[in-house]
Length: 332
Length: 185
Image 1: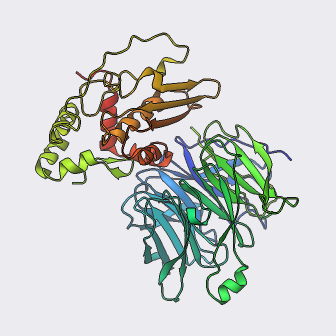
Image 2: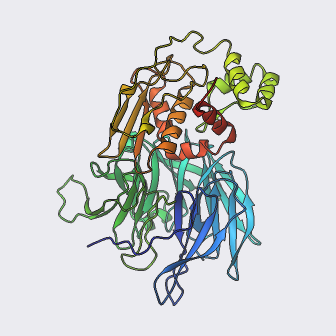
């Protein structure tokens, strides 16, 4: 197996922080599309040419955010794009006949918004910030967004929010070294922290930068400034949705693979997870069928040194296609 | 008035001095930069370290590493001396591994509770960002035992997201630029 660079996409004039594949593209003859966001305060929309396979920039979303755009996320329908910025706002963009219009701006965070994420049904949007809070917004008709909950609980800035792939359970990870799990237990917008994964549960010992779920949603991988990747598991989610919250347990820690801060992890549908780190490398990990009892359950499948000239800030597998493009990075 | 926000944190120098004299601090913001810094420093009921020991600048030996590693021109945020003259940074405290494209700087704040430690660290980082090829990985830390909140300062200084956000703050960037200005007299 080999990881090969297909194309280098140029356009951003400052570091690229994040990207997101449009989930409604890449099948039924619709060309693959993804969005990327950058320290240059813009978002770029990239589309693959169906015949040549090459990528081109289709749109530049600018003059809305006044500072770094840190995070971007497509709604499950692929119709809306949310972008979170250091300017403390989250913008919602709609694709109107090929043009992207900013249809809503969500204000409320005191300072830098670091991550945005839609739930599986596209009815809720979560945002998090250096102000230590996580906000949950309900999507109302007419591109209206109403804040239904402000979750306090982290002691430091919240680096990332991520919804469970099937259930309305929200995960957040922070500079305070913890992962927190949030659920609406009473069906009345009464969101509570139902679990904290920290040092007492074999958690991370420094900033947790990112997390990702496997396709079935019963495993989660997290990565940290402590140079480890950790895999967490839970009982199957059907029981969970029937009768309360099934807690997450530490399954294994992958130590010694990374040399500098790990910024990003992402699990593919085929069960391979990728990591992107400040040592410029991309690594792929896979289930280790021959692992000893008590040993790590995953093994390194591949390490691509110098995947980028600088830190690898973000990795994400494309939807649907096997072994397609992961990655993103810093570019200039 | 919220003081000087450094890497996401309102640093004591900003906070302490802004609170008792909100009016004065307003004035400070309107002043040109060099005077602003001087006044800022004076407003901390005396300086945090009013009588620092001044060391002689070391005669520099020629080194193989690029000249960018020379930090002698970084001014201390609260004194008209360079960081080298105050022994905040010494030549020995800059470790360079050219083969691995790695630089580690260990600096020593003048007093244990020096609230300027994050600013000094940020100045060092910006200086290196501006003068080193981008392939270099840089770690910056305070010398072990030299600062009361050592771990917290080190964590902030090495979180690239916080550094990026801090450098988008115009007031803070001004302060860093002032510290990095080639001549400060």
